[in-house]
Structure formats: structure tokens, C-alpha cells
Image (cartoon, rainbow, N blue to C red; front, side):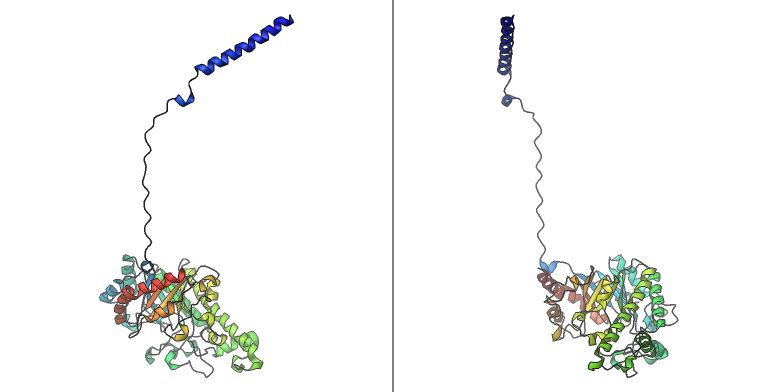
Length: 413
């Protein structure tokens, strides 16, 4: 029995071996298997990358600023000259010297006399600009209510001296500077807030508002009765008793200056807050001293425009930087050691304001822009005073701006 079982096992093994060999011999090699024929893949050529534009051709936002007091914006010919320029944005002075470009319902302010009864010049130029794809910002000079050339009959602060601010000598500062309203009189803020809300509600198509909220450099304004009483209630010290430069009162003087800076910031925040409540999405730009970071605390005590603080508070979307660019001490103003763009705490658009004065060489601003390192400036605001300067602005865009663009591009590399 055992030999039969062994024979059976051997037989099964031989059979399996023969079956495996037969399968191997009969199977077709894989390499001879027929291939599936498919349509050839379509080859799409790659598009060549566009060549980079020369540095001088890269776009810088172009803004033209016009003053309705000196230029008749109700004239269709003037409007055509303004909007015929290659600009991206137009700034229109809507409140300067205590007067509005538009017809106002204010009990304090009045309309610029040349526009009374001539229709709505602001609405007309706003609509015409938008048809051309040009943005329009309204400029409001919050505190300069009387200009040096304002006739006595139109002097708001002569009619309402309680609205004005004075220096230690009891006057409004240098005659060449005009007169300024007081940030310490609540009626000033109330009147301005009402006018701003009237502006943005009457012209909802406005693309933004540019505010100038500062005093003139050179004279310390802040000795009115309201200003003195406000600080006496805060620190129990009369500002008139502080002596600048005296060693014994230095800390007291610095404390007073810091308080004044905070009052201007509070004033600006109040105006912007009221404007935002009326139109929450309105972009806010401010005129900003480009030399603020290098100012001594004594110089800061004159203008009080602590605009970097306003940006950190989230009040401002754009800072329009200005200073006497043509003065030699300002040629290195934007060195590598100063970078507002990285110190404002939040993204803020930076623009350069260049006044196009008659007789001034348009190439002068180039010296001030040669060291624009780290600034991120991508916008030029060209301020004009009258129709003659508006006409000259066309040459600036075509001849000078490409050179400025090249300098700014080189500084970014």
C-alpha cells in the first residue's frame, strides 16, 4: 500500500511539471503582444513670456489737483483741458479758506462767490471724469479758514473770532499765513462734521476725501482761552506760564506738547469718524509732512500733525507726502534710514505731492526723489493753482514723469 501511495504522489508531480512546461511553451511572449494604436497627442506650443516693460514705462498713478478758487471749474473749456490730460485721479479743492465749492446749507460757511448761481460745477466735473474712468477726490482744508489774500468782507474768522486760534502774543500768527480755526472749540468740529457729511451725502459718486488737518509751521497756535482752560483742567498748569528752553520746565513743556498732539489726533479722529458713519466705505487720504520723523518736538508743536499715529489708529488709507522739496536740507529726506512704508503698522498708500509753481524748474523734484529707498511710493500728485499751471502739467506727464518713474524703479531694486 505504501509503495502504491508513493507512486501516485510521483505521478501527480510529473503531471504538474508537464502541464507547466506546456503552458510556458504555448504562451506568446509579452514583447510580441499587439500594441493599441491611439491618435497622436497634439502638441500645443508654449506662449512666449512677454518682455518686461522698461522701468520708465511702468505705471505710476497720476493725480492732478485743481483749485476751484483760482480756476473756473464751471467753464466747459476748463473742464475739457483738465480731463484731457493723461491722469488716473483728479483732486478738487472743495473747502478752502472757509468757503465751499458747492452750495451749502451750513450756517457757518458760505459758497465761493464765483460759483453762486452758476449751477453745480462739482457734480458736472465729477460726472465728466467718471465717463473717462478718472477717479475724483474732494480736498478739505479743515483748519485754514482765512487765507492771506482773503478780502475782509469774506473773512470768516473776522466775523467769528471765537472760532479762531491765537499764539502767545494774542494774534493769529504771521499775516502771511492767514488765520486758523481752533481745534479746542467744539463748535469748529461740529461745523466741519456737518459740512463733510453734506459733501459725501450730496456727492455719493466721490471716490475719496483728502483732508488737511494741521497748523502752519512756524507759529505756535494754542493760547486761546478755550485752549488754556482745557489744559488747566487737565494738568493744572496754564500754558502761558511755560517757558521754552528753561531747564526747570522742560518736562512740563514736553507734557504740554504731547497733550496738544493728542488733541489734534482726537480732532482728526472725530472728523473722520463722522465722515465714515455717513459713508463707511469712503477712502480717506491726509496731507502729511514728509519730514515728520526728523522734526524736533518743538517743530512738531507747531503743525501738530501726528499723521503716522492716525494711520496706526486705522483712520487713514493714504498719506500724501509733502515738504519744501527744493530746499537743500530735504534732498536726502528719504534715505534708507527712513521708511514710512514699514513703520506705519498697516498698509498705507504713499503719494508724493509736487506743487507746479510758475517759473519753477519741473526737474527740481528729481533731486528729492533720487533716494526714495524703501518708500514704496507709486503715486505722484501734481498740484496746480490756475489754468496756466494746468496747461504746463501736460508737459510734466510726458517729459518729467518717465524720469521720476525710472528713479523710483531703480530705488526699489
